Image 1 (cartoon, rainbow, N blue to C red):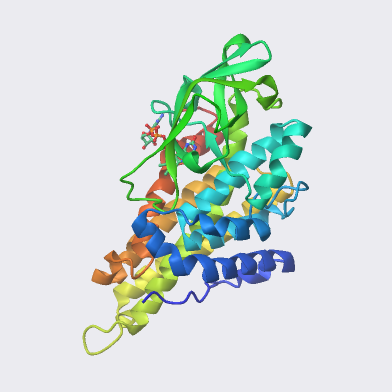
Image 2: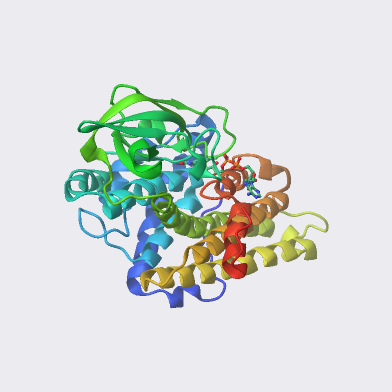
Length: 392
Ligand SMILES: Cc1cc2nc3c(=O)[nH]c(=O)nc-3n(C[C@H](O)[C@H](O)[C@H](O)COP(=O)(O)OP(=O)(O)OC[C@H]3O[C@@H](n4cnc5c(N)ncnc54)[C@H](O)[C@@H]3O)c2cc1C
C-alpha cells in the first residue's frame, strides 16, 4: 500500500548540487528503490538484516565511499552524505550497517592503520567481502566512553585483550572488530586494535527484543584473554580523540541520513493526506491543521538540507569542526523524529501498521537519537563550544 517516493525538494535544493553529487544521490536512490524498499518491511518484521544486498552495495561503491584508493569510490563528503540520505530513506538500520562499515571500521584503518593493515583490509571491506564492527561502548560506559574497563596488556609480540562491549552494530556478522581498550603499559591510554572475530576468547551474542533498528544486527561482545599479534594495534591511535574522530565521520553521515528518514515520512504523509477523505468528502489535506503539520515538516527538512550541505562543504574544505557536526546530527535527528511522529498522526490508524514506513522510521529514529552521542550530549558539546565551559 505504501506510496512510490516522489522526491522532496521544496526550495530548489538540487540546484546547489553539482553533477557528481546528483549522480551519487540518484544512483543510491535507485538502488534503494529497487532492492531495499520491496523487502524492508518483511526484514523489519522478522528482525532480519538483508545481507543478500551486501555484494551489490560493494559493487556500487557504497562502502568507504568518501575514502580514496584501496578500491574505494573516492566520493566527496557531500556525495557520501547524499548516499547516506538515500539509505536512511530506506531504513535507518541498513544505513547504520553502511555507516559502521565505512566510518567506524574502514575510516580508522585508513586513518590510523599501517600500510599492511590498509592493503589487507580495505579492498576486502570496500567490496563487502569482509564486514566489520566498532567496539567502543561498554555495558557501564556509553556517553562517557573514557571510563571503559576493556584492557590490553602487551606480552612479548602479542597483546592480550579482556573486556565487554555492548550495543555493537554488526557485532555477530563481523569478520573484524575495531576494539578500543586501555593499554596497561601506556598509563591506560586508549588505543584501537583489529581483532579478527574467529580468535579464541572472542564471542558475540545478539540483542533480541529490539523495537528499533530491527533490520540491523546489534550485539554484545566478550573478550576473554584474546591474544592478537602486536601488529594488530592501529599504530596511529592514541587517546580517546581517536575513536571520537571516527564518531565524527559517522555522525556527519547520520545528519544526512536523518533527512532521508524525514523525507520518507513527509512524502508518505503528503500523498496519504491527498487521497484520504474525511468530512464533506474532502481530502484531509484540505484541513488547516493537516496543512500546518505538512508545513512544519517541509520547513524543517529544507533547513536540515541546507545545514548538512554547509557542514559537508566545510568538511570537503577541511574546515569542519566537531561542534558543526554535533549541531547537524542533533538538529536533524530531532527534526526527523518529529516528522515521523507528525506523519504517523496524519495517517491515523493506518499509521501504526507496516503498510506504511512511518512507524518503522519513528522507532528506528529513537536509536539514532541515542547512538553516536545522545541528543543531550550533543547539546553539551555545542554548549561547550559556545561558552568555553564543559558541562558534562
Ligand atoms: C541500536 C544501537 C546501536 C549502537 N551501535 C554501536 C556501535 O556500533 N558501537 C558502539 O561502540 N556503540 C554503539 N551503540 C551505543 C551508543 O553509542 C550508546 O547507547 C550511547 O552512546 C548512549 O550510551 P548509553 O546507552 O550507555 O546511555 P547513557 O550514557 O547511560 O545515557 C542515558 C541518558 O543519560 C543522559 N546523560 C548521560 N550523561 C549525561 C550528562 N553528563 N548530562 C546530561 N545527561 C546525560 C543521556 O543523554 C541519556 O539520555 C549503539 C546503540 C544502539 C541503541
